[in-house]
Length: 481
Image (cartoon, rainbow, N blue to C red):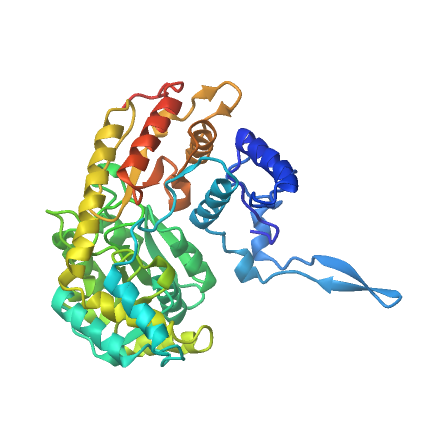
């Protein structure tokens, strides 16, 4: 995508509201000033670039700068690698929905992937104590020995996998852990196998490594779980990395142990194939579902890079703390990248991480209280949307997302709006009509669905459901299911 790419989630009515608020802010200093272009088109997550074909070539864009009495041409082109990467839609939607709220527009934000709870008190106090006690300097690049040892203990006790501290790399969030691993193990032309629906960043991380993302669709009728036979049919000599996420973002699906064992048998037949197991949501899981770490399966320890962190289960998104565990050869390569980019994670956050792992098995009572609330919210949403005609639901077994199939509403025409032709236009319609911010499924590789985050209070969710149902009343499912 060309360098000029930008996104907007602002439909006409909300854009007009912001324009009105901007005029007010000129005379009322108490109102937050926001910068929204008056030329903004009412499009939702649409690229403003001329063509995506430019991402494979170097764009010879120039600007003229006056230097002394002459003109000088400045090359402002970007690298083909960066041009090949699409911006994150979830980040764009979350940021702009937040801007709308700050501008006074009463948008209900159900797009963000972060818990609405405060960080547990014991963790917060550990961070505060680190500051008060002057624990504010650099730590070793790989993370403090104290935290890496605690992670080793956690992985042994909770996941049944054994590591030593030199097989752990602590990073500034699990996202950094994942991208460093992809960069460390993939060569140009390698294939990264990604089941869809997928977390929005996986394919782009593969492209950053000059690897090729190979997307394998799954079905809502199979609870969005990967079919081992389909996986095997897609593997080639170029297959380097299989990415699994359980519990899943965006579907909430949890891979049962038996299915993982079938996948492991296939992986074992392909010497070059590694597995990245993204387990960031492992503690947000609803019985009777249980979590299985892929590295714990027979023969898979040497093949698996296990990624986890503190953001989701411990409500520590802003602390930016994650880690990867795996064979020393691979982890050391990730550490090399980190040493030349960000260096180690925050010393204060690492003290908080130690406190988090000290809360007890699976986070103890602090986490179980949050999981109980998430389950209550999930049950409410499943029941509420189950009452709507034409909506397909796969009940999530973990995480805090509902991935609903609204495709029966596609093809509907709305006066003053136009045709609902996919997940993006439906989300734009719901933002305009119901003032609820959701994420279109095409961001996750499945345009039939929409992701709803229930990391919000039950009262907020009830209000959102009421607004969504009201907006959908004027739509008739084009195809009944």
